[in-house]
Image 1 (tube, rainbow, N blue to C red):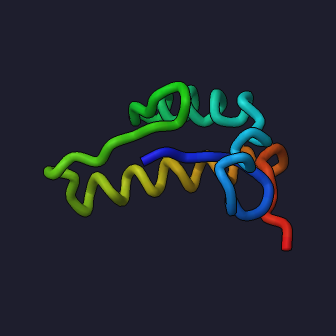
Image 2: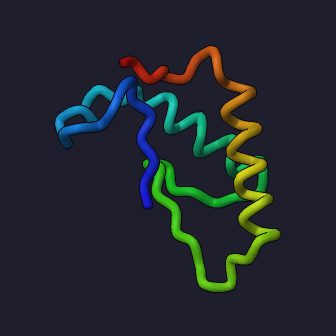
Length: 78
């Protein structure tokens, strides 16, 4: 799967051009520091032995990233 940090819904592929590359770079580094490998362009893979403990750890690391960087992340617009 691939993560994109953009404002509002991603309704067309062209909307991805609006993504700030520094945000995905920040996510990449911070997830590495938390012990999770994601690619520099935001791709990650979940393997079959990925159980509840691994999911809880990854979700916790991602939640920590979001709450730590809330002020600089794009916001959803309605």
